[in-house]
Image (cartoon, rainbow, N blue to C red; front, top):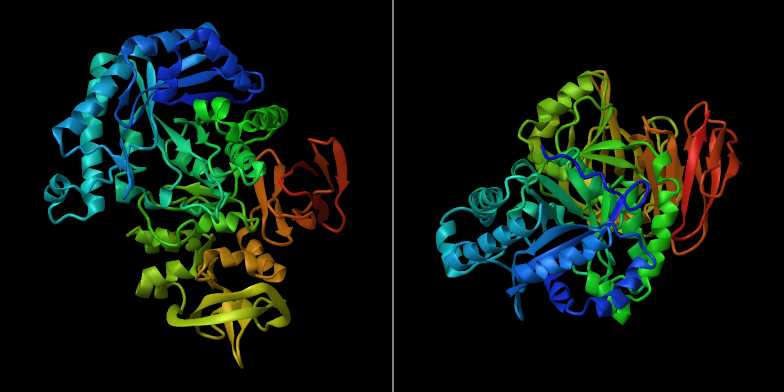
Length: 573
């Protein structure tokens, strides 16, 4: 394994900037560039620059790369190379990857790798290292395989035979990094493989871009900026070098840009990469971004070193699992802290399995072992649907073909013997009707129908443990519209081993650390009082940012949350 980099521009993390090839080629007059570059360096302590040699058929010469490298190194900034393996854009298909079924695509890749390895001791692939070509050559080469099977095979071939072979022949000590994009739910469809690629590359990097979750094509809940950082850390422990985000589609609210930075660092990223140099220093659209993110880095650096390792309910997602896209991030936006795992977390006491986990062919035996040993397993309605008859090993619950539009809800005060109350949701929610056997399975939360009700949370014992089933709305974002009382039931199920459980609406994110610290972050558009139900023995909390002590009364801590502002708490026993 390569020796980890230890240079940091801040006490607790490093900050890098990525320089696309057109920015690299534009640096002809160093004095003129210096005047523009200062817009970033006056606000942000830059410790590394990624200098790109190729993107979209544009190249930087070896001479230009060496010139730019010398400039940054002269300022004490470490320099690494970069490659973006795209052929450009067209009017019909957006971004177009290089075609490796054609000799010219392979030659571009080989040339870019060799150039980087010659000039730099480290280089990174921007997250265009995917395959989306469907030309006649690719169609013929694919044959009867699925596109996923073909692309995964091609990715392994070009990585082994072209990228790593070429790089190590030119520079045996070069550190080759692949950056994974943020759209992890569909990695395998374009050739990304979180099991295979970390074993082939020296290091990996994480895309933590979330942008606007509603008015953007990728529709990514903001908690993803944290979740994917932790998920990729589980895929390559100790070799996930950092998180990378950009300002695009964030101008509607500067906080949406800053949130990417906050959550990347809350996930304990070793480095933060800002994309891209030209956008930040030259484009008036993003002129304010450097000053505000610089303030953020100073703020977080002040307390990040006090935080331990992130913890949360163990969320198992196998590398190429599919289904209920981004459900983990929707739940994270409901105040449920998760710690993602690419391998089944057999030693954990609370394990969460969404639909994608059902793609593990050994999942039934793994669940059985966990619960026989006293573990709590939480599954979604989508997991029940995908596992089908296999789920009957645990409990007689089935995913029916029927739906219900619901707006009123109940919970149980006596472990499911009866339900009570009538709580109105924010708006009507469409849910699947889950079938279950009364007196064999217990309904902890329900939605009212007409002369009927439908389970939202079910639970029963198994061995020395138990299993819970959470009903997920057809529009997963409608989880936010469950009333506080129903969200409370769901949080309690997840929070069995956690230091605190949120009592309040959705839109509040929690981040837990094994040091006893908690970060509370509000994404609500208004100020809101919320409560943390804390673990036994906690008698006080300290807000370490504001240096204020907060009292705990009756096991509960009242907090006044402000939109986009973090509350960093130390729980004191």
